[in-house]
Length: 597
Figure (cartoon, rainbow, N blue to C red):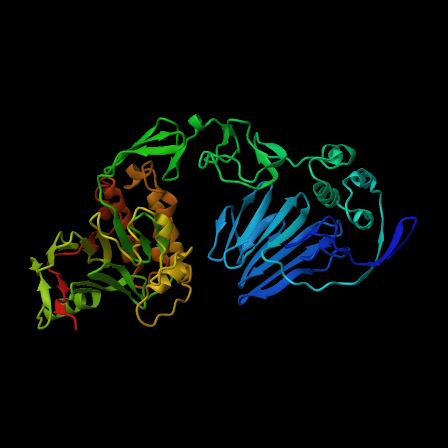
């Protein structure tokens, strides 16, 4: 029921429309529940838009408005992961994100002119529209419907003109009087123009694009079309995802408010200015550098030419390899990630062989490596290397490898003063760096299939994070956790052990980007500098066994990356004071050869 006089209105009611599975709030305070009940609340207090537990997962969404009616803060909590929308910024777990953003439990991405958060653990999504001054609408979509509690409200508000509603009579809305009352409540004094327009747009979209109101509403209101970046143009109804150089033919069934390039053009998403180009003019990107159409890159292993935004490459002459350098792992298929803790892991395994690595409890470096081939175990340990130095390599159950060692299924020999190589009867090769830290490089024959930290070795990065139980994860932590051996606590590692490590890392790792330094010849080439710089800083930050040694390990990894591309960086050890960390053959390596029970 309602009573109105002059500019005021007293309302005590609830309304039901035939809209299901969507809960939303828009305008200056209009709420629509999952069962279609509509009401208006004018308040600057936080409101719980929805809160529930489904399949053991807790979820809540809280919204708060400014006096202008626009929302200035939204908090989305799903499975203990908090996402906050405030001041035009989206942050997850306290960190500001850029779009698209992929998380273990959710995916956040641009969806037309909107932004969508899609849960990976619950069958629901959250979509919102940001405008100047705040958020004008937010909706929660759910399948199947949830049960909600209906609210009885007694509200008193100031009304304002809603002339546009007279044009909506032709739509024959089942609850026209209800929407008219909501309009009067929504248009209170000092309401933000974007809050007004968000309400009117809801009415227009209820009427549909076949009505007179569809083409007229922006002309008879002050609601302007949203502005689009670059040379893109706004469309009331269009595909959510515009064609881009990266994806010229996106799969987008939904039609929403969107920004699109001119017909026959695509968005150049390899640049930041949202400009449209023809597909034939799309550039390519490699190693953080942009290449024009027709440009080539040539490495030790293959050559590639940029054509229509994609690299057309010759066959790869170099076999794929899995790299484990401290905390950083690169899978056979090229996916790179960081291990979450100092544990024992299954690095890789096949039908008749397994490689395990054990990390030091004090430093993020490999302490032990085991290779089990047909029940014969080869074992390398930093601890035993130190013991051999003091005991002059007097072994009983140990075989000290000085020149080579041969079994039915494996051959072990020194490849250089720093590397030992293992070759197996089925074609696997393993290169073990023994100093200054144990690091692992695995090569597989084309027919071999693997599991473990090194991924699946099938030329498909999408399933590299396959757990020991066969589930494909989206992030490194649960994936790596499934491949731990024994009891292990995956406590989050600190970004830096202390301030001294951080200062040393930032200062010394900067030589990788020095245009006149020993690594300058590799700067314009194929490796993404930001990744290498991050790996260098990360290694030193986690260091507890001598900062200079850890620096030399990080620089050595970079030099090996250069060498893999056929680039010789010269005597980087002398230039970086790392010469004393060269391993000598007289130090030796111990491999334990035993038949497992």
